[in-house]
Image 1 (cartoon, rainbow, N blue to C red):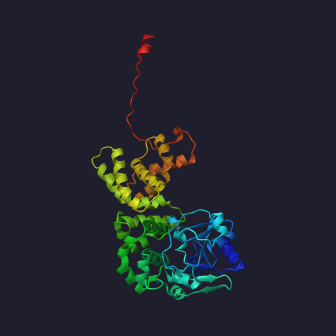
Image 2: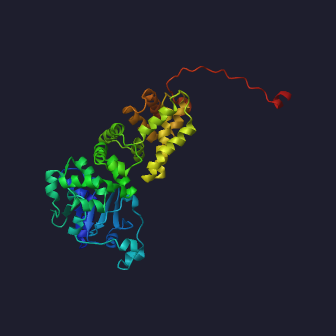
Length: 425
């Protein structure tokens, strides 16, 4: 367990509160996996937690949570809730320290949007409102026991993903639970419970009603997981993708090899930027557009290409609520690929491209695209050598960057004609 999580648990316990490790952290520890994060549930109210931890911040518009900050780690502390409403995604959290006046007077009525939805409850009520049985296990720091109100231990032993409660009702409350059930089945190698499987088939169209920010959050979680190809395939099999992301290219034969390539990088310990993983989903459309605009052998009309590239990206990225920064990196990163179709001819060309802020995204896309055959690999070796030299001499002069020699006809420079003032003087 994380030493920081233990520290938070014991401080809450010593202060007289109940404090449980909850959710995925308990699940992963029980099956000998390294937890991605550690979440804590308590009967302390957010303002009380805030007073115990000076290195913390209260966040959330509808449901108030506390983030306790340590170096390189954030421990999330939530008060037990009875409300069945779905949680907000991190992209929707409104971060900011609680005002001292409110911290000193927590019983005073606060903003209606926050207070009315904070229906606090018991640990058992909190377990029953969670999405999956295997994510509803609690570890009690007071007696070192694992508490299971929903049958999660049995499902964990059997390798089954089961929704807490009636799956049809739970999916109507929060359609994103369908994506999460399928995602955990792939990530853990578990089977869906028969009633959960049937309910997803029956309720899959409800996913179109989910908040786009939460859909994008689940998509990014899948793309970062190292199991993106399998998760994508399951979502597509149950008909969720077409409803959740109607603007995306859903050609399995082209998307799945790209995602397998991303998964392989992550499994080797590499890091793939979010902008790269999203842009990779547009590589098939980019390749088709590039082939169409260069089919006649003429030079690419950059301005027209950029307009059409933006028209291809904007509908999907707007619906997905992709940030302006990520869109900028995707847009310019994909356009940079048009410059890498041929071996570089000049060191200045390499330096200009590598110094652009979107080059890291462009380079990852170039490697992924050539690996799966969407982009031509004829110039890959030449670009690899040129980029390697730039990295060895990041502050070097342009003349020091040696690129592959390209046969070009040398043009004789014409003698400059004297200006009228020079000839008369």
